[in-house]
Image 1: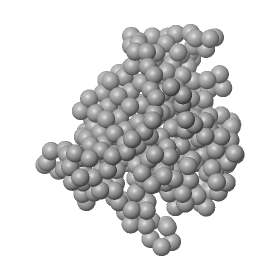
Image 2 (image 1 turned 90 degrees about the horizontal axis):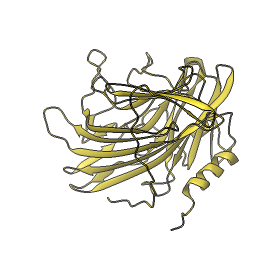
Image 3 (image 1 turned 90 degrees about the vertical axis):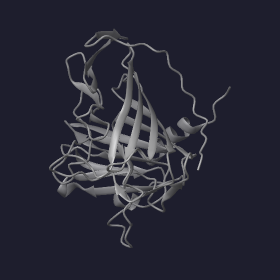
Image 4 (image 1 turned 60 degrees about the vertical axis):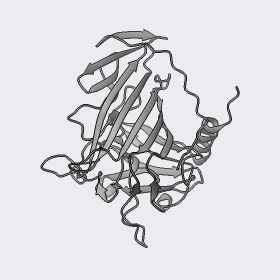
Length: 317
């Protein structure tokens, strides 16, 4: 399978020294970096986001993820699912090997998600670009799938919102079958895997909406172009929207959603494999493109659809 996208990337490379503060248009940002982690923070030290990609990260992930100045909207390693990593990407099964759940004693999954190369470029305005080469390797074997991931993280806007443009190309090193746990007839089990976010336990007054106007659990298993999950955290309404590009396989994708505020179990992501597995012959590529938008307030279905149309509108030469 080979999927082409007409996605335009623009980038002026600029690497900042460690722990450098800057002031742009009246707003101050701080970059912090340590081995395997980069963080953007406000002038008073509140993290806007941190990206973890070191050897101690079983998979690369974002946590915290916040509207600038506010608390995190995502949860890291909750006790019920300690392999949930804020905002992250993980396959479920590759050729029958589990890359998702992790052994609680070792923190490692059966299949290894190995970061072979990482490059982080930071800019004065608080934007960044992250490039990764990732290998997916079964036990005692060489990689069966390689990924080149590019993530363009925007500078926070005046209202504290920001976005991630996520672009990943996977190349099969041998014939691979990508699949998830079977979905039962009640749609209460199976169907997860891919780009995912786990909602912060501190968030209250949950609401999920898709671009078709479905809400909360009515979204689960249904095709949609975008889903937003919002609530109140730290006394302020805020949300995260995930937009699925129309050239992704199976678009509009079926969405995975867990919505159980009594158990603090909020989770969503595009269910790329919800309907059926994807098979790649050796040498074949698969490209996935998403946009993740972190924003203050709550969005309606109309606002979500407007953002999706703006993102996917044809671009001029």
